[in-house]
Image (cartoon, rainbow, N blue to C red; front, side, top):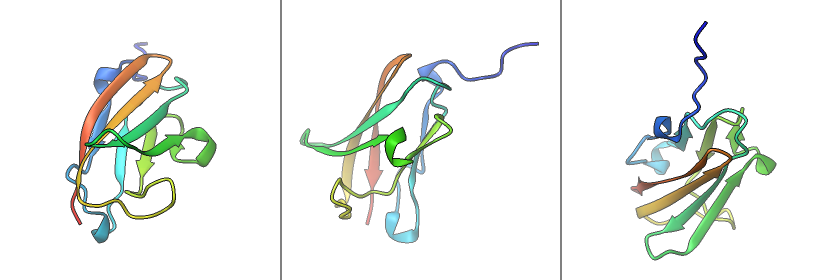
Length: 102
């Protein structure tokens, strides 16, 4: 039987993008390779660290989907704009953009 578990960072997707948190949306970074010890860093377009998502804070579900509530490390809403995520895990790194519209 073929192994159907995702093992490549090429399979990682981010949705909804753009994200409208004021309408109840949460950013999901999905298809993270299983058992890869992921940590996701969210940066502003200026390069400032906004938030860190990891298993310790229950922001990564089943080690495969991370959820960002569009808040910073101090639980304050981030402003509208483009944010960069950097996913680091045992399989390597991947980065992408997230648009937040308020």
